[in-house]
Length: 456
Image (cartoon, rainbow, N blue to C red; front, side, top):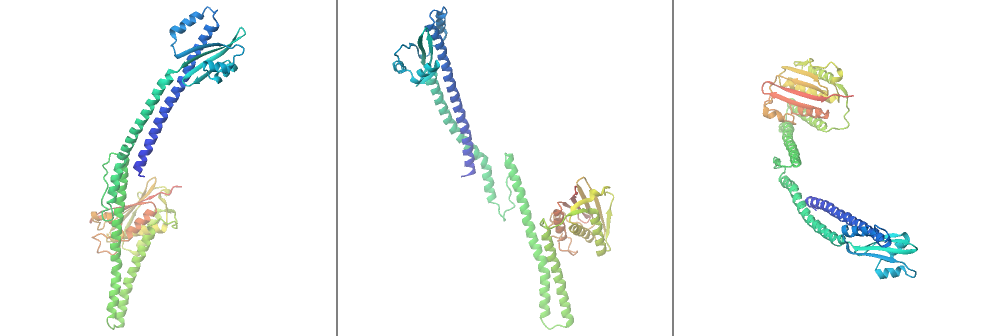
């Protein structure tokens, strides 16, 4: 069963149940009230009949009777009975003679008063002993309200319930269709989206806030998936290129060496070239393996409390040994006075690799011009900013800079594989941090890293 149909049926059943219960409650309580009220009216007449028939010596009897005739409404088929129970008269005989319910007469004899109903005729009576004689006084009448008005009300309620059921079912299906129609359109549109048409997006111009939010969320998901596909395609393209180059060089060098007999020096030179390309291939493979490892938040990585300024100084010391010509300057003017505002929860080795990559790139792509490192902090973050005065990056290419194997179009004169920055991004992500790259062509690049403070 479709969700649309199920929703319409559930809404319809809910509304119908409420209407039926409401109609039943009206009929039940009104019916109960009409019976109780009718018995009270019979008891009023019973009291007057008692005074009139059994207290004729009373001076007020006639006045009571006059008031009765003037002001009390005559009930339908109203009858008054005063029965003297003489010796030899049985309850069964009285019941047969006057068509009274036998149980009603037995109740009168036992308790002195009672009420009964036979069909649509209602009875109220009492039993009195006056001057040694036993009397039964009974007033009976038909409940016209119950026999006519309540039946009419019942029919009206039944007809109304049937009409409401039809109306509710119609509007339930109508509104259900209106509610689910945008979802149907969304599903039809989603069916058109595939890997070949992942650039398609759903229409966000919907009047429903919830549907609009759903569409927006789905479009954002599509954007992330599209970016992931582009990154994957770019990764495969660049990775195959980077791996093919040393492999081609190795195969070509070996083929040339085997074409004819060579001298010892020529074989040694060929093997040296093969070794160089093999080492390059090994370096690329290891970089890819490490990049893949840092792409997942593995539980085996050990985190501890680390001071970011210490890791930066250690990274600078390593760069000084590798590249003594560098001009890295660490600006401490923004560093906080409290050491606790420099501490983060991190893996020191991974963080060291990330900072070395950033400092090494800054020196390499600026031809060892000035590289400035700033360290600052807020109430919940440590901020590290690395600025160089290098070649910069073309603006359209900045968004691809953190993709594996991507290299800017103006970086061909510099050695590299395009793995350092993606590796750094993965490490920062492992630390729940954020990396922001800004650059201007021929003016330099600024890399800002934000890492959450270690909170006790």
